Length: 224
Length: 231
Image 1 (cartoon, each protein chain N blue to C red):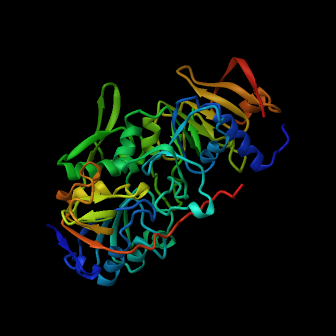
Image 2: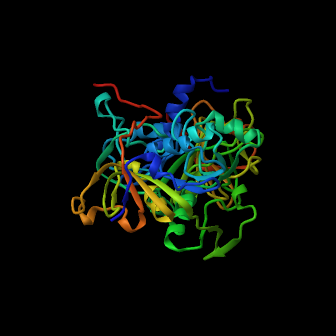
Image 3: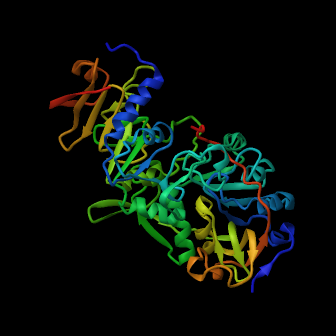
């Protein structure tokens, strides 16, 4: 069993691995929370445009103290700057970009993912429902949807399942899952284990995943 | 020329109990804050509010909520407000959650004379319950209906006497679609300018959608103040 790592270190590791999904020239939507962190690791040689569904194509870095503009936020409602060459738009236009499949990639968080690519990440029955925000639109629009999350929940139960138990955000929408233990692809044959984080074994990944796994022949060691 | 109001009280005086009102903004950005304050003072009640969010406990639509003036809320994310949660759990407030892109498009459709449209968002989720599902080009879509309102309250950076509006940065968000979808649209502008001052090619909301305007000063409260340390 791999040594338990610090939460911050794990989030950073997942974010860095997720960054590798971003190619030069991509338009990308990053979800709220851990996905937003991915922006901090984008390699400077890559020219990438980050889309914020509240109407900003070209999110820049966080503002310095004197630079804060209360009219300029990201979808997480944090103050941001606009990158050089950014464009603003209204919410209908923003979601036209998303729904119209103009984005290359979306990286979102997840509560549960099923082997057929179903995603649940917005509500837990019995708890107060806060709303889905833009997630249900984003999972249908992007050319590729990558979910980043812990491999198991805080009780140690699998989050990658045969079928989601929670109400869905989208049906058959996930392409790839990146966790603190492995990388898995949703394929027509089923869920394929393509990378394992150093310190974990195939058997351990199988044991902590409810869905059946096909193990890729060229299984790579995920670098840390 | 449009009606130019001299007070926010006057601007909202036609809004009666049981009205359906669209309110612009994403979080607290781009909300018509003075029009909302005037609605709170007017004490109109049993309102249906259509807005992406419902403010926070002490600002924006949260003030109307605290005053129990809202019967029904249509939005996409309402998690920033404890009083909201309390009223929903107590059965005092009806909520209709709609995916954000669907909400934007429903409002756009409502203002553009489109009664309904098909969208993939929500297929196979609780949102699909009771909705027509249709397969087009091999993919499933939900039928969603356009939305209109008795009143739309929007916020713009600049407006002129013809009702032409220009928004600032991400304060644009839902405001342009709502301006078009309201029977009576009232714009709170940071600056009221003479016709001709706004470049015709740069206008976001053409004046035909706007019935009344008022100039006001906003506080522009920030929900998540996030800064980078100076290097």
